[in-house]
Length: 337
Image (cartoon, rainbow, N blue to C red; front, side, top):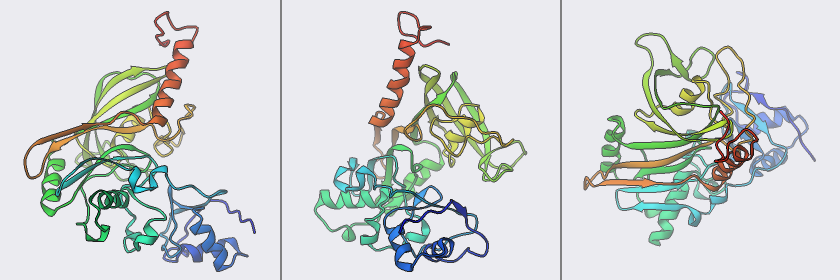
């Protein structure tokens, strides 16, 4: 039987019940077996994340979507495809693909390894990749410790600590803002080199994260922006984090009037107006291209760079070519201003 259901927000009456129970109630004529099959087939999304746990308890105001077709696992779901850039007993640095959560939702922490394989996080993939490289069972390895994360649709370099000492020392470096973190982003319009400073809050007044003008409220966020390349109607930016607040780059660029191409969250102004995105970006055009820190034990300075992955390379090239072909471009292929 084919099931359809409009996206819905969890009501106070539904909060606390399992995903399977709420879906079965919403669908009306579905059996428990039907509902579990929909969930295991990766057709159910909670927020912006596929949920394959039918026992996941929902919270009030969470958004649930029944997809028309199953969402495939990310291509990198096999741990052998994950690129490890550095590994020792204290730290591991990997290249995160887009479409994978960095860590697991708290409600899913007790999942078995078999269940985790259905919807792996970067943390899972990294541990399995280490186990494969060392030829040891993953359960015998020290657990990975989170010191920073990237949004699900953001690609790029991520470090995990593998020891309590590394967790403590890397955490200290992140708090002191000495870790080098640079991102590449594609935004509409033209931007200039600049530094954006603001104080970020969890709710700017409309339920979304953003900046506040209230004195002594929020956490200071500083982003240094440099123009990498001007495209046809778009700009490729280099964004260096001085601080690392949640969604900092996306918020700062959106509030500057240039939301990251492909962003589906920070396109809504506090007035309620939506900034249209006509870029046809394949996903959030944000990539963590540079990472550097002092080794937590040896003190050696470690540094890596990672170029734009294929999907964003093609996206940039498309607008680069359109600029070169524009009748207003000069003979050197400079996009019109």
